[in-house]
Length: 207
Image (cartoon, rainbow, N blue to C red; front, side, top):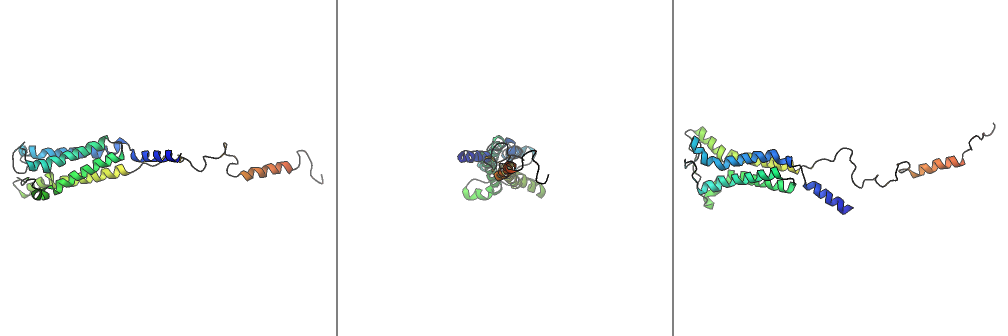
């Protein structure tokens, strides 16, 4: 019985409702799609990094934007479809790694020989700051935040329903009916009182 209860406990801990990570998963997919496709379509709207050419593939775009975007999408899909805490946590960690790479990838690009993603093409300082945030810094921070929130949600274990007795509880082995189960001596005292008391109809002394 103990082995079976332990197995049931582990199974209950690992399983979770599929809706637990659905919202975070959808948001991570949308952000991953944005991060992976914006370098190719942004030049069409004057919102890009150099080279300011739409649909032009470069190694830097592939490593620093398409790769983390695809990993974020994968993590979001795992979160949406997972009914297991272990796999859902894996998806959240993948998304967190993708967000972190959006933030620090360009710093490591030169030492690792990945290539240079270019500079913002905005005409003003405000526009250039917005492109920097939307393509890398803020995008990565939001992805990491959503991944951390998803980790917290999928790690929470549901409470036991109110009134549900635990398996093997202290009152599961008592006799049926419950009368005299907790205090067996009480029943003996009542039986003794009936056996040695005056018979029915017998009058007491002095009557």
